Image (tube, rainbow, N blue to C red):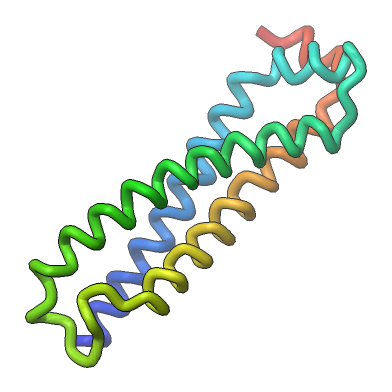
Length: 127
């Protein structure tokens, strides 16, 4: 049973990673024109990358707050099924936060790097 639960946990993390990457890539693709204008007006590639990663960090913060609140509320309901763990196990929560933070950074860094490499004139010609 624990192996099956672990497999589904890994599968859920993989789906979250793919979904986060897709949402951020789509957001960056829709904002190519805006990014081109910013770069044409003098924004460097690091500033554009920081902007995109910063927006992903805001979304991550909102998601973590909601997720922790729901996990704390649902922990009491699942306490009977947690063998060897407390309903509010801090190391488990910390591991989940670190894992999702790392995934969010990687999923936002790749589209940010791609957006920072866009030539301003080609971005302005799109749309």
